[in-house]
Image (spheres, rainbow, N blue to C red):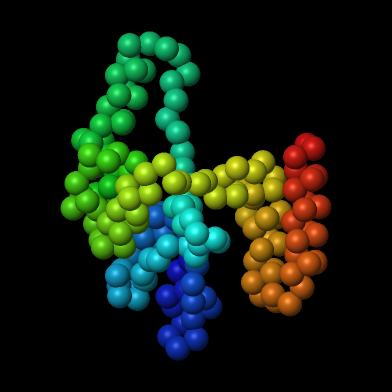
Length: 171
C-alpha cells in the first residue's frame, strides 16, 4: 500500500482498491490524505452503484448478560466514536457524527455507506473461502495481481479464477 505514495516520480502504483483501514498505512508516508490520497466510488456496472464493502461481526459465544451488555455497547455511538477517532475504521452506526473521523477521506467513505442504505454488497474476497479470497499471494489475490501486471489475457484470467474457485469451494 505505501508503495503507491513513495518513489517520487516513479511510484509503484497509481490506484488501489482498498478498505478504510489503509488510511493508517497512508499516514506512514509523506502523502496527505485528501490531497495525494483520495477516494471515489467503485465504478458501477449497469444502473445501480452499490457500496462495495468488507466487514467483521462481533458475536457472543455464550448468551450471558455480560456478553449482551458488551455487544450493546460495541453497537453504540460511544464505541463507534472511539474506533472512528483512531482511524482505519468506518462505522455502520448511523448515529455517529462524521466529525469523529480523523480525515475527509474517511468521512467521505462513511457518508457513502450511510447514503447507500440497503444497497451494500460485500466484496468477493469476503464471500469466498479463505483459500481462494483471503490468502495473500494465492488464489484470487495472486491471479488478479498477475492480471493487473499484464492485462492482455482476460479469458485466461477468468479460467484461472474459475479453476481456483472450484478447488476452494470443494475443500
